[in-house]
Length: 392
Ligand code: TGC
Ligand code: FAD
Image 1 (tube, rainbow, N blue to C red):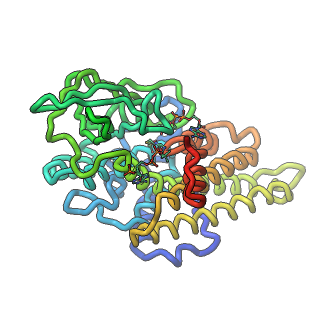
Image 2: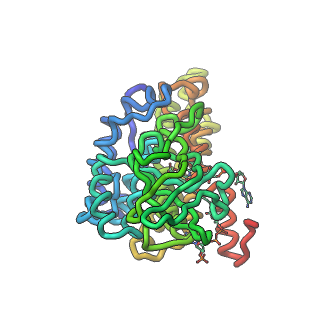
């Protein structure tokens, strides 16, 4: 990739609404992305390899468990800091942000919120440093948008449980040390189980041939009569609400993360448009290109304000699932539209890996699908305002 010249847009002086601590945390993440992610990410994506070298840096900038209390190894930060870290990481690559989202919101959060004290002490500090990596198994081959239909199940065998089933499209699965897996008991009630690598009958084959999130490892979680010790069940909450509450946290992070991808595309397109000469003038001097760029910065600014207000609500414990859905849906769509427009501003250069835009664009095709599809989030808003669920 060409040199990373990124300059973050802040058209409405939103920085004035952030604390000094927020800005320092963001700067640390921004510097790390520039130094350690930008130089290697294009090659990792081209080779479809997860760059394991970044795990240590992710832990150091507080990306693993930003809001988990320090006594469990987390960074003990507020929700706006969490969002800003996700924004900066996704500015580098959505796949890298995925790794952090899963580790924080889908593995550490359920253990922190629903685990025993022993589970928290055993797993959280190692997850915070990246010594241990986690994955989250909710989606199945036949149950994506409708996880309540899951068939993965466990049976009580006295001193342990026996787990059977299959999870699909699981970020981090090929290299995870632990997986938080959602499965039904004999009464059909959903529970979370911590499955550890090395348990007999547990395998994690990688999913190949992805055109999106190529620098993130995606795979399956397969359970063939896996004996899970009873102390590995998460006792604090059961039912679909337990995994869905984890999704609230991850979706919130994505609402911020998508802004990062959009900012990178906008910044690249703006610089290119000012430098690229056609018909003896910079293409930035033509109204058609200005329209694209002006609409991009308008949409980024709106998304920044939406995310910041949501962060304030989250800090106060007031953000609803439907508010989070609205922000995830709006901001990811905003980012994918900007990526498509920005790619056109670069003409032919937009399709090569010298620039990050096409990689962001392809990544965002996953981001608009995972953590609830674009349609599902619209239906969540629809349900919230009408009181009628239109899923079924
Ligand atoms: P529904 O009947 O609405 O709800 C079932 C129970 O859950 C409760 N609930 C929640 N509780 C806590 N937090 C939330 N956000 C909650 N939303 C709902 C609800 O009150 C109810 O409780 P109870 O006590 O009455 O049983 O459920 P439904 O089956 O009708 O489904 C609703 C729907 C479609 C919105 C939900 O299933 C959904 O969100 N589907 C999308 C699935 C999804 O997002 N999957 C994501 C998988 S993980 C992933 O993609 C990771 S990508 C990671 C990365 O790389 O970044
Ligand atoms: P489907 O649910 O089959 O949906 C197909 C289409 O039908 C979509 O357009 C959808 O919007 C539409 N649709 C579905 N239901 C309705 C309805 N009621 N009304 C209108 N339209 C509807 N899952 C995990 O558990 N853990 C992970 O770590 C994880 N990581 C992922 C990483 C990647 C790269 C990807 C691509 C996915 C990942 N997922 C993960 C799975 C992801 O959450 C699902 O792909 C997503 O929830 C959609 O499920 P599906 O792919 O089965 O699509």
